[in-house]
Length: 98
Image (cartoon, rainbow, N blue to C red; front, side, top):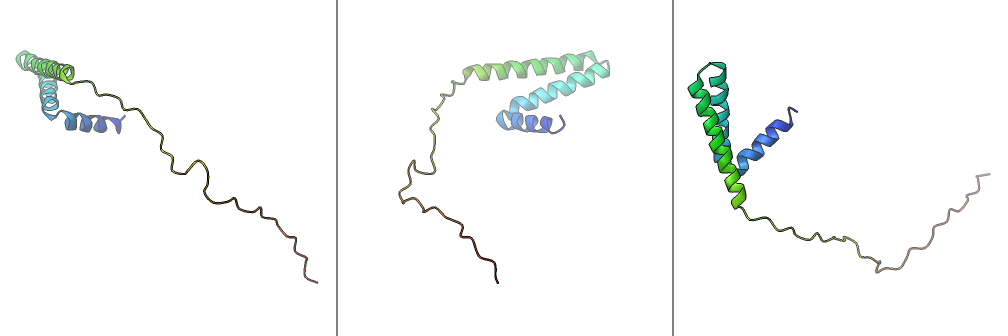
C-alpha cells in the first residue's frame, strides 16, 4: 500500500497538475475545517474539491477516444533457417588408459 500511493499521486500530478493541485487544496481545507470545527473552511474545501472534480469530468468528456492500434506480432527470427541443419553429434566412447 505504501509503495502504490506515491506512484498514483505522481501519475495524477503529471497528467493534470492544475486539477490535482486544486483537489489537494480542497481535501486539505476540508480536513482542517472538519477537525477544527471551522465550517466555513470545511465548506470551502468541499467546494474546491467539487469544482476540481467537475472540471476533471468535463475535461474527460471533451477528449476524443484514443483509437486502438492493431497489435502486430514481431518475429525476431525467420520462420525457416537459411542455412542447412547441423549434423548430429555422437559421443565416442574412449578407452581407458592401460
